[in-house]
Image: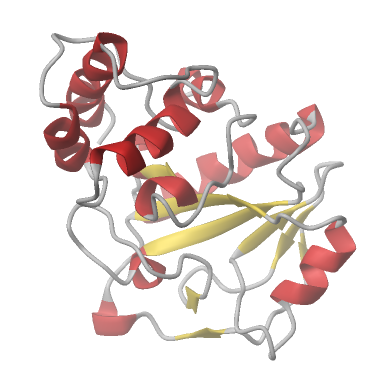
Length: 216
């Protein structure tokens, strides 16, 4: 791990502690371009951590400070996700697989952040989870199930199909139209799926509530 300080941060508002970790992809052509943007005061964007394709991990903003990575959105009915989260950027254009060294480095980083701040697996979320319809990162190529198997996120066991929107909102997703939530949900849990909402979606959404309880 190396330090590459970004000037783009401030105090966490209201004295809150991080309770979430938000995962992103940089959506840029190269790691160097992503780092330059995250450290450019003119962009007013940043993250706490940036991980290269080769597994290099760079600290951009101290974890106790408020990085500018999440933008508009909410989780569990609360806004200002920047104040409540740690932001991790993965160097990836959004159109390519995530290399093994990068994911391995992410797993090590997540384990440490979760211990430092007492964040459970259910608190590790996608940018697209808290900002559905606006963001799509880290996208359908990201292996959430692998993280869950390592205790670093959650993966639902299908339950009894029920109220899809209600179950997602109870898990943490923002209140949004069904089609918007379906796209965000499938990006994370069924990226290969297409077509209208079905009972598999409803069953997995129902299972998320049990996953949250087990992985709080």
